[in-house]
Length: 65
Image (tube, rainbow, N blue to C red; front, side, top):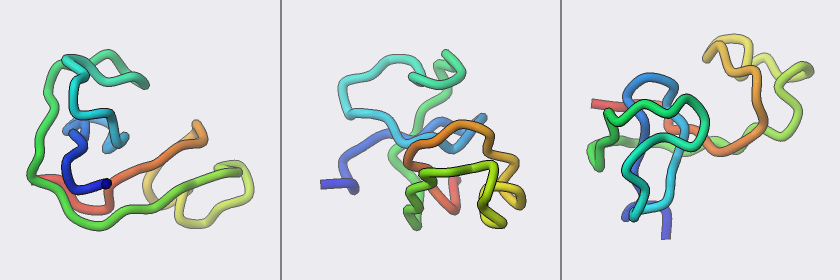
């Protein structure tokens, strides 16, 4: 389930709950306090990816606290 996953405060990438660092940017600033979930498959063709400044495919949180 997505709600028990950790999200990176730097890049908003959704990570597994046992991660100590972000899979995408290696930041150790992970949080459980996030909302919204979007999966971006083709960032080069996505307006949402452009708005979020996402360049890699993956799952991202929309709001991170």
